[in-house]
Length: 268
Image 1 (cartoon, rainbow, N blue to C red):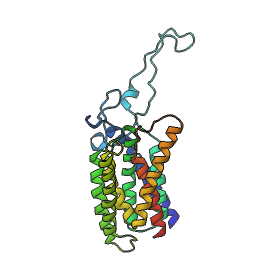
Image 2 (image 1 turned 30 degrees about the vertical axis):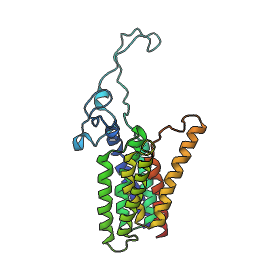
Image 3 (image 1 turned 120 degrees about the vertical axis):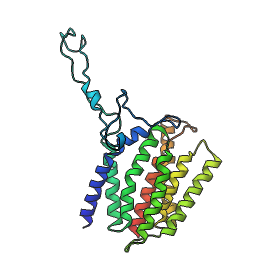
């Protein structure tokens, strides 16, 4: 049963992860810019949910032939037929579904058949989406972070009503308030070093970690800081960044929360 559950969770993660790259591309804009609605060549994005769901390959770009030019091949004078344009991706393609599948698989293996597993599996693709966006443009959109916090609170409340759950809903809410408050304090102390999007992300992560208790909140929160610090130190050692260089902290917050959540689920 455990092996089957892990496989099913991985399949869910892979399927959900396929929907992440298009959304990540559309959300990856500067705060003052509108969400993207076209590929880099200007072709409108089509598909389900008003273009939010779909492939990361632009069919219209592929349909436009590349004009033949002289010198493309030995002896080519440029009078041959046009070549088909190679189909390229405008957003991450393979890595995102793989990461989402792996995250869902390890969550299922650690949690087992408990009600809260449904919450983890539903929120994992959202977390991967947020990490992808933050990595690309150093931004965590309100349209994702705030609904995610509300969804986590409601879903964990529903899980707490079901038998066999292994966590506490009040503890989850307190964990969200505590971690969110801590990040808000960091934001007030150094607004240039901690974005307000990180504060709103901390609400969701704190609730997820708080489900299993305060020790898990501390472990997951500390792991995020440790990973971020290690990454920043590595960049400085390689002379690719300075002490004041900004880094996207969301991916490290999410990875640290995942590690803490796995520890909490295994210990529950």
